[in-house]
Each structure stands twice: as structure tokens, then as C-alpha cells.
Image 1 (cartoon, rainbow, N blue to C red):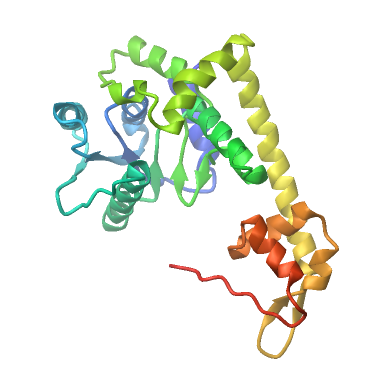
Image 2 (cartoon, rainbow, N blue to C red; image 1 turned 30 degrees about the vertical axis):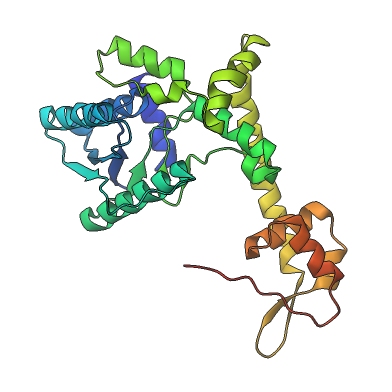
Length: 297
């Protein structure tokens, strides 16, 4: 169950190596992020310093503006520093991949605020249901153990302290604490893959087992432990695969060819070779061939 004490426990597990860090909360106005903002606001007397950021994409007309007002009102009422980005014509929207465009836009905005305000962590309101949706999406992409391990709770200074709590628990907490939030009605439409999984597939899966979501949470925990173990083993194997010449550190194709397909994939994807056909080209090439992957920073 989501409670203030349960939330504090999760948050402390994520920041145990940091003393008095500062936070930027990504708040959309929905139930998840407004509950997140409320939970942090309750911690202010304990010395938790945070600010709030919101993006108005202008994609849903008055609904988008109403989302913004809910977040602004909360921040004004509680004297929280509020950062707003309103999408304008200069932010050219692509014909395809609007979700990817929106994601890149908001993270660029968040990182700029973090740098300017010197805030240690970005905090998002991803929850257990988001984990399940991501797992299913990654399962369909054959993304390997990293993808099946779901959304990381702490990665690249992004914290997700609500990952162990379900959407239902979040709604219940919001109701019990009279937290005002906005429903994004576009989430009810199954026009995107994630929405289709959320609205059609997951309800069917949940019907198969009364404890489906709870059991999934346990499975994700086991997968993350497996991932950590495998990562350590891959690093050990990788050290033995390198040879050196005067100028370069070179991965030995002959040694790598003796490893399993799984090990080959896990090692080569670190260097940008993450497609089966790319990996096949490496092993079918003549001896002495070199492969380079362009990296954009």
C-alpha cells in the first residue's frame, strides 16, 4: 500500500549514498505526478528541497491549459518554485513519433533546469503499471534482459520512487488525501501501442490471476537481480576478449566467436551493434576487417 512512510523508504533506498540531495519533480497534472508532488511536499519539514517542472504541449487545447493550472495552483499554494515550458510554433512537431518528440523535448527542458538550479535528481512518477506496459513493449522487441528488467528506479540521476506502487494504490492515496489532479482523456484512446496495451491487453491479463500485478512486481525484482549478475559476468568475459596493439584496444573476433550468441549480443550492443544483421556481418567478414560505429554526443 502507498503511504508516506512506504514512499520515504523507497526514496531513501534510491539516495542512500547522497547527503541531502535536491530534486526536480516532473509534474504533468495527472494523478501519478500530483501524488508525487504531494508526497514530496509532506517531506519539506524534514529538509527535502525540491522544485517542480511542467510542460504544456498545447496538444489538447483547453485540457492542456487546465493541466497547467492545476500544477501552478498547487505550487503557488505551497510556495514551490515552478518552471513552465509552453510549446510554440518554433517547436516543430513531427508528423510521426509525436511521443518520442515530446519525450526528447521535456527531458531537454528538465536537464536545463537541473543545470541552472543545481538540482541533483530528476524525479518522475512512473509506477508499477508503467513497468508492466514497458515490459510487454520490450518483450515484443526482443530487447534482451535489460529491456525485460523494465524501467530502472535510479539511472542517470533520474529517480522513480513510485515504481513499486500500482496505479490503483496511487488513486486510492489521492482520494484519501484529497489531492486534486486532472485525467488525460487521450489515454483512453488505443491509438498508440502503449495505450493499446494499457486499455486492452493488461485488463485481459489481470483477469487470469487476481494477483497478477503483484506477481509481476516479484518477477521484475528477480529479473533485475538476474540482470545485475549477468552484467557482472559479461564484464568479466569481456576483459578476456580484448587484445592490444600500439594504437588501439581491439576486441578479438576469434575469441568472441567462441562465446554464445547471448554473450556476443550483450557485448557488441555496448558498442552500438545491436541488430542481428550487423553482428552477422562482423563474423562473416574477412580477417583484418575493422568495424566502426558512429556515436553522436
